[in-house]
Length: 171
Image 1 (cartoon, rainbow, N blue to C red):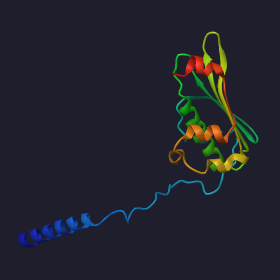
Image 2: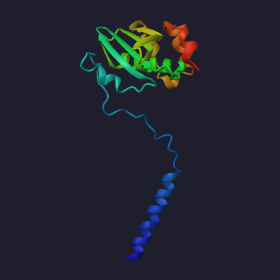
Image 3: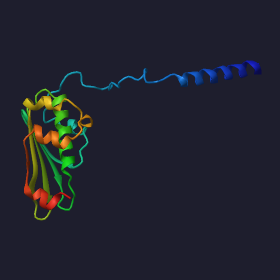
Image 4: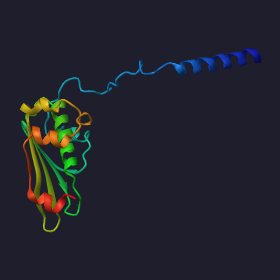
């Protein structure tokens, strides 16, 4: 009995060693999400918040407004908070790409970054970017595959940057 157990352990170890030598590059497959939407969803006031919780942003989302067929997204920062323009562009690209990929009824995305003061309660526009479904082809690649998201967004979309952004917020 011990001889058979020892032989089985030796054969198992040899087999495991031989399998570890086989190159694994041929076996790799792309991951397919289990809960992937089979068809685009119709965005509404009921499901808008659910969609925005799936995409992380660098800055806090202050407001989401749905006016068929337009989506207005406001991100907010405090006056003492440092803001990097490259992160703003990345947030815009990621959110808008997700909106156009997952929904069927979004035609325009208006994206704004606001500076909010608590006392007195006021907001100031820092950056505004607009996209429409005519630009939908510009969102073909994931942001990780674009070498310079800043240049890409500035070249493909209308971007408005308030001069105050450069004076007060940007490092």
